[in-house]
Length: 293
Image 1 (cartoon, rainbow, N blue to C red):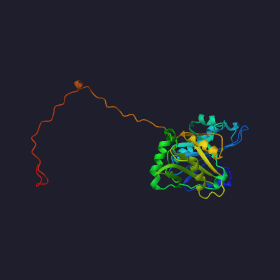
Image 2 (cartoon, rainbow, N blue to C red; image 1 turned 30 degrees about the vertical axis):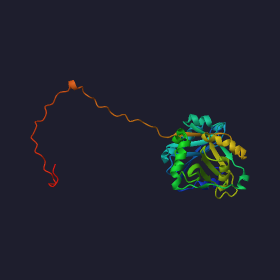
Image 3 (spheres, helix red, strand yellow; image 1 turned 120 degrees about the vertical axis):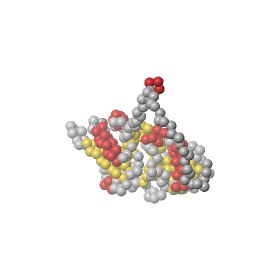
Image 4 (cartoon, helix red, strand yellow; image 1 turned 180 degrees about the horizontal axis):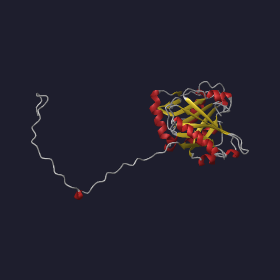
């Protein structure tokens, strides 16, 4: 919605046409006075997770048809090879409990902030640069040190990660921003180390460093483990949306393979087999006569 607009619009449909991205839309037909229910899931080749793009309409009347729709989206995600199906929704959504009953669980919370347009004026000096391969290990280290294991298990670093913007201080990457562009807006998922110097200034610089803004609004998704950024965003005049739950449905089940134990017969119950007669063994001749001993 924030980057591509109405998911059922022609512009959003065209945006889904991508050689490395799969898109699947499921429809639960109308019956017994319940309106038709639409849901879409997207998957990018090489990722470990598929993502629910939208469920519409969002009201209490669709709750009875929702489990079957979610099961169909999960089935398609599994056929693509995804290990997880992710979804984001407002915590007060009428569908929240229905998702949980369908096997989804919360692994993080987030709040989306809309940066003020005036931040684009009077840009500060910026240390943000496009991330390169030389910074990959530093960015991965930043990710592993700040993101909880529960989140990494549901949303692991993908093969397409580390193509955003990085900020280094004293030779170390202290912030990274994953960026998604769309015709209606720019969606940024930032990650800041608590030791970063002047984070508020870095956020301002990030908003002015993003390429090809074209007056599009900039949104920052702040996860619960980065909630300390919110005070600074308020001071910058950013506008917050209601808190969202980030959900995951695991599509694979771990199974333990039980090794068959050998039955060990007690030594005193074994029948002693006669040993083979000993033969006189001649010393072997070396294949390399020059090497003796």
